Image (cartoon, rainbow, N blue to C red; front, side, top):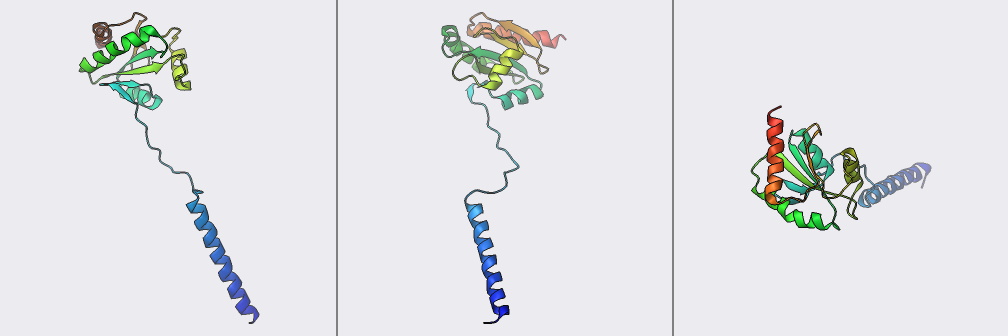
Length: 165
């Protein structure tokens, strides 16, 4: 076999090896990162009341909603007692412009976003409930353990106060 034959075989083997390496890299997951991300929706607790999720919270603000934040600790007896009351209030509430979030506070489930949110609003105690506007202005704050009716009143009073501005 002459030099031209050896060069042709060497070139063919090089191409085959390159194709095999590319195939192995693709199959093993060594590809460019995807450009799109799938949004993860917040887990609903009740109608328009969710476990806190930063993306869903930001979307609610952007949509101009009144936002109810319940700073909840899983070890807090007051939080546990009022949780079904707040859930019932949201299930009864027929206001699409109001959304609520149960924000973990100083427990094993609290993430960095929840800690930052508590700091931003000066939350120093679990079972604090606040209502904020789309520009994150606090319009209502309470530490009182709420019944369903008290939670509904806090929301409706906050709506009325914002409507008169």
